Amino acid sequence: MSWIDDSDDDEPEFDESDFRARPNPRANRPRTKRRPAHADATVARVLGVDRGRYTVLVDENTPEERRVTTTRARELRRERIVTGDLARVVGDTSADEGTLARIVGLEPRTSLLRRSADDTDQVERIIVANADQMLIVVAAADPEPRERLVDRYLVAALDAGVRPLLVVTKTDLADPARFLSHFDGLDLEVFTSGRDEMPLERIGAALIDHSTVFVGHSGVGKSTLVNALTGSDRATGHVNEVTGRGRHTSSSTVSLRYRDEAGTGWVIDTPGVRSFGLGHVDPANILGAFTELALVAEDCPRGCTHLPDAPDCAIVEAVSEGRLGPEGPARLDSLQRLLATFAGS
Image 1 (cartoon, rainbow, N blue to C red):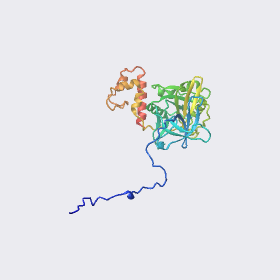
Image 2 (cartoon, rainbow, N blue to C red):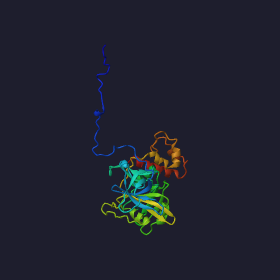
Image 3 (cartoon, rainbow, N blue to C red):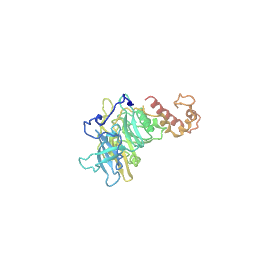
Image 4 (tube, one colour):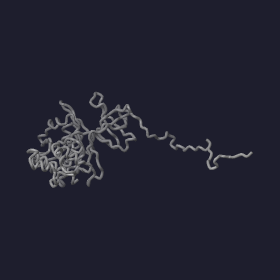
């Protein structure tokens, strides 16, 4: 009788003694991609950002309203948290001295205002989240108003779906009429302000129930206006007599509350800028802000730029034939100027 070994000689045999566990040098639990749901998180408004710390407003518009200092959770290390964000916060939100809460998530944003990298700044900057208005502040003189910079602000606002407003300061130094004629075709509310005539009530009425970001060139009086409206003490500066340029005074973006008998609103003060990159803009959003022109543009050839040299542009033809009424030429001129500003960015 013969014995046949039918085992596979090439297949190794294992037992428990062959198991080798990789040591965990930190003696902690293995990492997991599962994150806690934080169902108990409190939604708070981000008022300002300073060196990795975020000041948020908890229990807004209640008797328990308070400002809490927070940091961001590790899982948000690649997420940009900016002034105006609505953040989900956990931890100690008592606002007691020495306490620190934690931001674990962000609510969906309704708008995002940003400026692209350009020759003066190599990094794209998110300016503010959830604003619904942009108040552009320019000076009638000292420094001289820059139409092209205002155009760039307008393009960024229209792209973000934010309503633009315009304030011209220092009208006691120069008549702003010629400058303002540049914007005749726009649906733009304009305020003028001089040394002895600051229309705080009119501007304030436009701020109620809104979140308004203030932008402007350095030295135009933006921080002075913010202080007058909110009672804050943001630093103010002057214009260099040699260069004609304003000195940067506001170094960070911060939300401040406007309040009067009619209601409240949010004023978001930003550092002064001398340029505004538009590389992120979708030109369709610029056209969309001109409702009546956008309807006519549906008959334009594919890829039409709507600029003066655009062949067979339906908007140009409608305006030349008088089909858009007496306001048509000014509206078309404004659209073309803004599109040209974007194209040259």
